[in-house]
Image 1 (cartoon, rainbow, N blue to C red):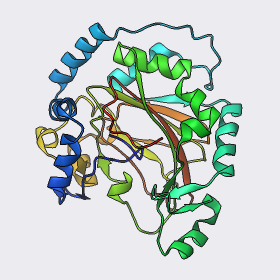
Image 2 (image 1 turned 45 degrees about the vertical axis):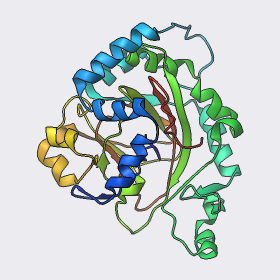
Image 3 (image 1 turned 90 degrees about the horizontal axis):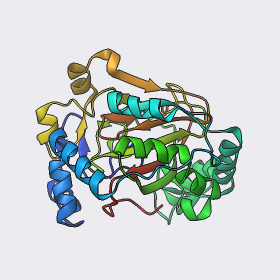
Image 4 (image 1 turned 180 degrees about the vertical axis):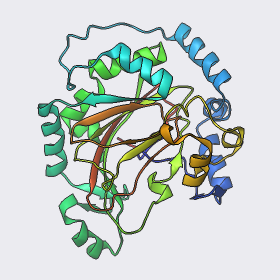
Length: 310
């Protein structure tokens, strides 16, 4: 369950530093989706089980290779390079939307209202956030667009883009299953990192293998919500990280275990994209000076029904 896309949507109550205060709600959030999901959530932490499950899925759902000559929303991309880097590093950073695709997606977000905290009761245009906070008596660090697939043709096309599907297909060695398409604002605040908005390091267990494609729809630098991931952490974690119910870790824990060179910050102009195995440790840094608009397309081997409404 990812997302709010660079967040952990598992229902955990986190405290930075590794304290979990929501054991029963967390446990129920995994049980309620059935035994298959519970087994995946339990065993999917361990690479040996992940490898076996991927091999079995290949036999049951072998990849179907389609032509890449279909119209794409992405600038030229070498799919084999993307797949190889995903397998090695857990991320591929060289995706970019075409100007026309970026314009269509941005136009939709600028023309439509978003939902504060994902709640339909708190609807507002993103430029009127301050007015909405006064109206509703709440502060909003995040807001997302509902029913994106059915309301935004550009988002629907991106979800079926031949390059994205081919990268996912190559990474899974099976036919990818579309799990979710989302777009959301992370607003600049003075509140510091918020764990429930994905702004502390965490990993996600969306399946035995999953990949999320992220696209910045605004310019992003280190002060406006840059995404951060730990290179290679999809293959290498402390045993204590795997055995714990909760998946969020403090900066100090991460920096003590992983080399500084493996902590990768992604900045870029609007249209910049990247692919990530969300089993990597990752986080979205808290925007300080400018709001950030992000879009995500997520694929898995199977849809466990854990995604939020798109």
